[in-house]
Length: 547
Image (cartoon, rainbow, N blue to C red; front, top):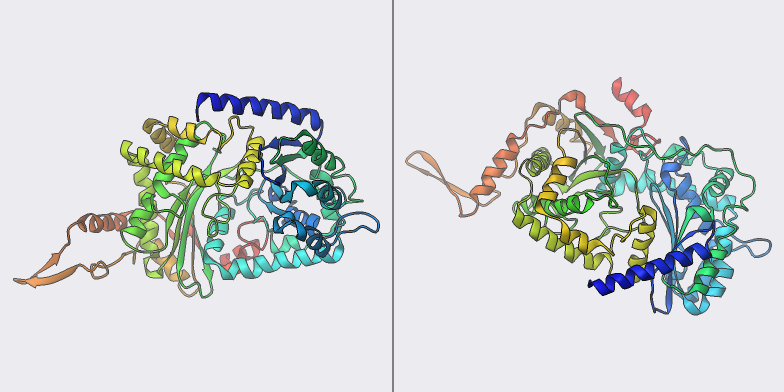
């Protein structure tokens, strides 16, 4: 981007900020994207999420967000049910029906509306939805049942990858307000009432707690949408008296801890490990650490070192990645979704499911590769290649108006100027090899780790014993690599193809890596112990294990 273009964007941003202040005094913060499309992208982010769920009522934020859309809204004889909402919005396109995405510290409502029906959309949907939710009892009960089914059935038993990712997410933040899934907990959901939803709505669904993103700079459009939010949070009726605490930081991890989740009929073994880092994308060091993560384990891409060694060179699994911030719904998204901001982040490694017999070996591999990254750093050539890869990723991060607008909403949340995408290429360009390695040494470590392994219930305890005793950790055999051997004059001679020596040597190094996970640092838990309460593992399961 040239100097003239940057100046023009800065001037436009100043105009927009001035306009937002004039339109939204004590109202939502307004973010715009200048688009000539006949479709308006609209996003409303609330600066709250599941981390404000009251203790013992985990899931309240998620159920409230869903109920605003699906448990009726409007007044008098004009109540709009979820069926009415589908019927009203159908002529305007499937994306005109609002959706909501809830995360730890934000919930974001999104919709795409033809410009020429904006007034009708505001009158029939937008204004009553945010100002007059009904929280119909039967619909709330249905939403609670569906969330319970998701936790007790789908998350626990249907997807080994999502199970492991959610488990690690909860494990790292155990003891804090991040330690339960956004969906909630089984016991917490059972305590949610209409009055609790009304209390949450009154506490957080207020214009001053909102960021309004619109793909237009038209003053009339912004005024209408902002004015439509003026009464939000005021008409919920009598709510329960609940305490909403500020999100808490994770506790310090000391040493390495391993939880093995015993899942019936797992079919393979998934490996996850990580630790908290107090750095987010608004931090000056983020770009350098991000380039290091691109080098080490680009998500669902062949560029990363982990992928190269574990998948490409040895063919153990589908992929192996590393992250310097939370990446929502990783199995299903190629690129990180926006509107998932967190004040507390973590570094993680994801080894996608592998054959059970290789799990111990590849846990060692993941730990060794992290230690090796920290010890040796990233070479100049690899930094250049990873910066080039990061530039390619930029093209996907902002490929649609919806993503561009969502990114600007995040910028408002973080207070970033220039914004994440607006300044992305310049930040990547400015990163030096020295900065990358300084960030690696400052923020990454391998001594204090939380590790989650999801494996078949019939193999969990044997794997725990093997890891504690440092045994049965061999990887693929020479035959697996199609390396032949023969007997010559009474000696075994290995016929090693050119290029395979480094593979065999690294296998040996992986096997020699010391994990230091003694029996007291390892626990095996049934999958039913997860997602039961606001803690990573239900207290009842820990008590049963102690006996």
